[in-house]
Image 1 (tube, rainbow, N blue to C red):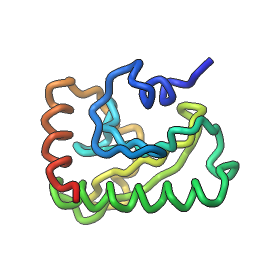
Image 2 (image 1 turned 30 degrees about the horizontal axis):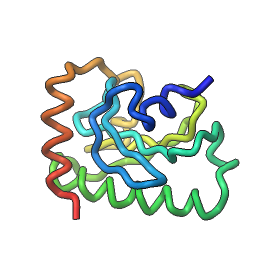
Image 3 (image 1 turned 135 degrees about the vertical axis):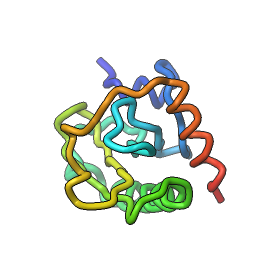
Image 4 (image 1 turned 30 degrees about the vertical axis):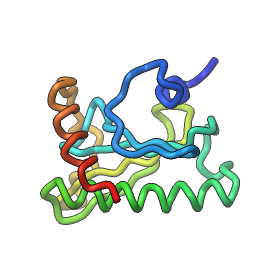
Length: 130
């Protein structure tokens, strides 16, 4: 059975896309820690980040870097933090989280957010795509 993220990448489940190419997808987390909290995935379904082939992994990091720069231009924060836990969904994903301090990288702070608010944030971030 396809993972939740595979179904999102295939368009079976809607998301608030930030950036997409043939291999990767970045979209807003529906339970953000902070506004702009984005998930970056490879479209290829792989459970564990250290099982990803080298070329795909390096491309994922470059894609995440581009996405983080877009987030930083729109969301007021000191940095865009990055976290890979890998337990929530059995599909490789990088969390890009706008932060003011290291304690912001805490999933206990995640909260459901209305689709309308996510759509607004996604639109604001996408305008910084080059």
